[in-house]
Length: 541
View (tube, one colour):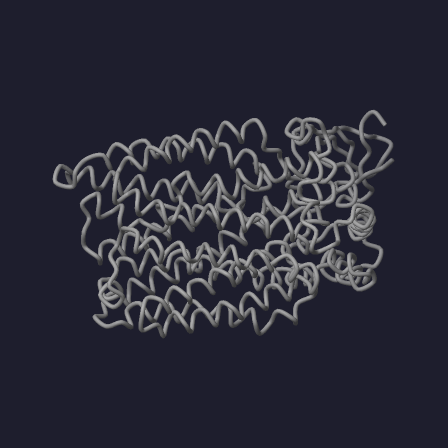
């Protein structure tokens, strides 16, 4: 029953205890593992992170990550240009209020529209097509936005950008999860959201900081134009990338899928144990998909057809929707307003602090990505939610003071809390926001589930982005109390219902959700004996 496992780094293997085996020349040790089958395949062969096959895979991950750069750039763009007087003078808007709310929230409506076609695009024509068409729509939206003489055209451009980002960012994380090596899926998925989002965000904040010194409309037009750069690259290279092996299997191209896995996962070895294990699991999943009718692109009922699917949708709600209301997005989008309410009124200071906050958050996210497989998704989510909730307490207290009553030390304390919040949130949440939803959805409905998530996310984001500036205008600091309460509600829900996904292939995760208690099952480890290069055997077999 040998199931043997690998590699130079074994992120899913813990609690190693060396044992003596005098009858064998192979290195032998006892390990506690989450997946016996995956560890068996990995132990039989090593793949160096410096091999040519891995560098090819790194290239695919980097190009896919450009899709998230678009999201990061736009996520910071409005926060940056909202601090520019030239922008508000040109369109006759102001920093907060219902007029500003629609400028921000129309992007979320575009997300909703894009989600309606994202799943058919990714399932029918392939993951690459979704990235391609999404990038094309973003470029068109950018042209409209940058050339806008009136606010109506600017709003139309933001709608198209939201739509394009929804389509491309449905296909991209699916593609990445499906092409990544299972033992490194965590760090690749984490870096996708961290590196992609923050490279886009950093580029935007520092570009906007520089152009903010200009007294013309180019101060905001230049950042808007530059946001199309990642989309142009993706548009040019999308069809030069290999298609997802899981999409190829699902569309009756098994040999093409197998060759892709041999090239990128098997180091060009046709006898690779890992490739054989993956092909076997994917084919079994495809058979089940055909039997359950999951391949009908128009049929979304499959998302609500069983207990395990409803459980997954609840987790999507926790990770992608509920998190919108715990305050992180408020800091991202409305940091200039928060700073102004705290007594920091200089546009230059606001832009600089916004840019520095992004730098520190990026560093936190990079470190957090390295712990996704080591500590696990559940641990990062729980600690991150709890600690950011604690940080939100002094943010509430300081915000309750009138600007005239704020001291210099209180202002510095407020800035420190915002920076610390960004670091902790980026360390724990940012690496997981794209990875976890793509992991927990089964292959047969992954695109539908991600599209449905974008619909619900877009709706909640619209409410949040429209209601928050209006609420801050009307009730001020009391809005932060709402976010504080939601922090701890999120923590309680996650503690009892969020399973661990590290250390398993995405096909093995499908079995996990069929258990009576997925959280308990996800934390259960099996003891195995590992013979390096030979495989593993579960103790008690």
